[in-house]
Length: 144
Image (cartoon, rainbow, N blue to C red; front, top):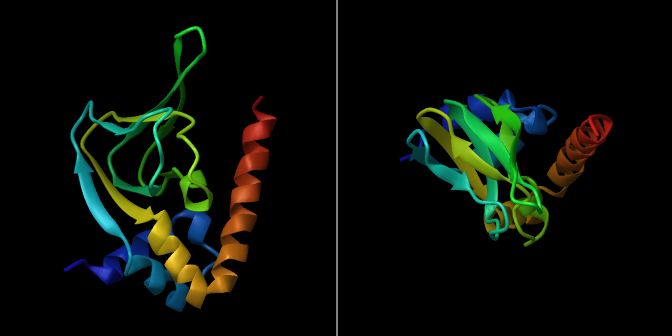
């Protein structure tokens, strides 16, 4: 059985979820799945379908974007409390970059289907999360 208290603690430190209350955090924590990856493992692949959001609880991962000419560029590095794949919570589009484990990585995963199920009972959760996603999008645009 998953350690819900630990998951709530981790979620409370993730920027996407810092505005949520204890009840909302528990609702999310109850739906998380833990998964481990070894160094070099592909966590998500650019151009493939997305299933959900990943939160790194331990380890580091590199974000690689393959350009149209085939060049690969490392665009980011993620560590504990970082999240990626958030767009997959909102639509069924393709992944915009690959994420590769740079060390042993432990992730907590929230699927789109579970997220939609939570929103039926916690609709205000969506507003709080969308505000944080908008901030993240604006920060990304500033780097272009």
